[in-house]
Image 1 (cartoon, one colour):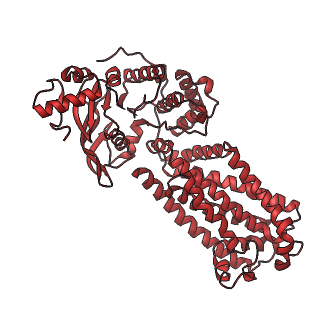
Image 2 (tube, rainbow over the protein chains, first blue to last red):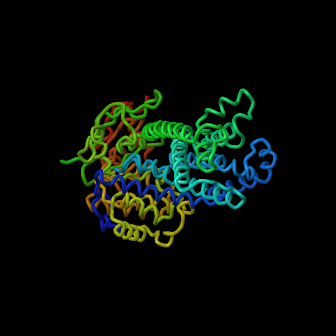
Image 3 (tube, rainbow over the protein chains, first blue to last red):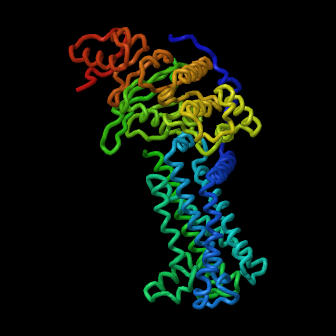
Length: 282
Length: 261
């Protein structure tokens, strides 16, 4: 037997841990709180995420808006065209933040601790996704607020507004899970930034800033049919009363919902599998 | 005799490189066991396998009565792991880390707060409770890591090189906390590179070398039996005794005759 033992106060007052399936929700809640806390603890990223919508809105309305609207021809100015595009662009940027957050987590020891504890495995990712949703909705709110301030005049009634917001939530969720996948497959936070860089450029190849019909012939089919376009057109149709493609809002909405659902299911399954696989294999 | 850890023939290879080459290990309930080995001996891999973070390629183990492969959930309920790299959240404060893990251990909010306060005091972190962990020193992080591991009483506490990089005072404090746990009936499995640390803390020492347990006994048995004062000398003695066919000591169980090739 070795040295004399001195009881440490640290060991007093134990509570026996309780476990069960009913605690999965509680685990998820704790992880969401963690994700939100971490979001505001990174002031630089947080400020960038909030400054971006404002700067882009001013840029697109006051710098490019005059020239762009000559081609777009939105009544009441370019702002009446561009708002859905900016929301999608900001969601792409937000996805980058999420990918970095997931990659950072995976490269730190805390995930090992979580995994060695009897908690719902999905809760770690769920925390990231929920935090991502809140961050992105904040950015969306800013786009809408600044848009209204610089002359955006949607004609939507309450139901159409609700529809547009539902579209945004579905889109952000799909992008967040996709971002989580990026964060899980890359080697670290730096690589995650690179991997999601592309997501910020996809909107330019959609009807976000100019109608697909005005693009070069080779790009038109891509821009008209890629998943971002129906999402943008659904919002545009609901808010402004008509889409830029000429298709009915209902048609765009079904297409957008199908795209979002497909991305959501595929990305969420892939991310859950990757989370188990990646952390187990290191 | 009851064992908290009972591992038989654990093997693990990464891309063809064998890291665990058939590890047999038993840890008796309520004891402090030290896994002694140099860098790259496979200590961390063995710990990760036992903590359900890595799936072994072959072999089996039970931890606190739960089969590692058939009932990983049971293993997770019974263990608490403190890693070599402090497994705490940098972007949260010390107090938030403790409360978060307490909530994940399903303590009610008030109990979680109380337990966090208790542990902050016990590990002398009360003054730093509201600071983000990324501003902590190495010793403070390690203490917080251990505190987080002790939120709920585990049957087995697994510590991977708990004192690496700590100053003597922090090390002493950590040792006393570990001893206190053992007095409480918690089984402890820790890894270390230092025979002196194993001697200070452990009731039983297993020497891990090139993915195998090459010797087992108490630290003093290892020292006196082999005439060694450090891990290097233990290896020297084991190697020498194997080469010359001599006996390293009756009390030391040598597990493989040829330690080095």
